Image (tube, rainbow, N blue to C red):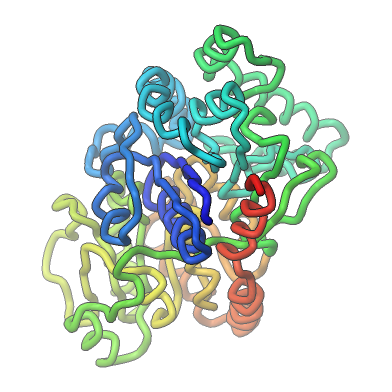
Length: 421
């Protein structure tokens, strides 16, 4: 008989897709997964025939003003935690608590604050997950800080990495004081930072990213399993691309694909205008995934060599690309890695600058900050990627490693090992 397993998440589709993929694998193994997520994910989850429960805060990926603040390089993460997650903490708790009454196990996302302390209070087994290496805040592999990427260059100075790690943990702890207050009210320990060590389960921690990005470090939790990414890419990901896009791809050389994922696309600024100008300088074909936002449509005539699409599954489109330009979100990044194509990463905030650094050191990517994203610079960077056979070879070699990882299966093995027998 299967078990009832509650999986929690919050964020963009890059945060939702992995847990839907885990739920599908758990269902295939005879369990009853329950997905507790923002309301916008309901249609996706229910189209897969899975049980869904909305949990506040209910993110709106079309709220341009809010997304712009979330994507701010310097203050975006603080705004997300202090102004969106913390005011909704009581609501999150009220939404999740009833789901735990008959749960056999809980799977938590890094922002599932209420689920963590509710599972602890009820003595329900829980497994924590992370989606990107930055969640471990290791002094042995100092993360690239959003808004201050230059600090990574100080890592070689003795003591600097430890200092920055301590400062980062101290700063973020102030953001989550309401979580500590609630834990104290429930009689739970408050010794660990809920955004650092406190997000990790003492039973098991699943790192849902590829081992090519990071391997366990001495200051990671001892019970971490790096499984590889869950490669679920939406309910339509395995279906053919639109007929018009298929025709475009077949009509000429492989295009450069430009995308900002499902969140940064709402804070694109001039990204798509500069991208269009860059491909015209290069004389290459391109596909621009501009989202549903009218302001992302480049002004002027669109040449026949460029195709605008609101959206296309990355897993289906990226293998047709000559190169991929993207924001460095962990979901988009893994699909780009799997495609074996060179990439130009344009990181905005959160884990994206750190992800960009990690994929650049693999030798298959270059990085260009949004503040420097101008057509001529983009064209130069793309030309270097397209003309570099070593970069192409590295992209293919890395893709083979990433494709060989069975993220969903390996993660569910860990989950099943902790289920009551």
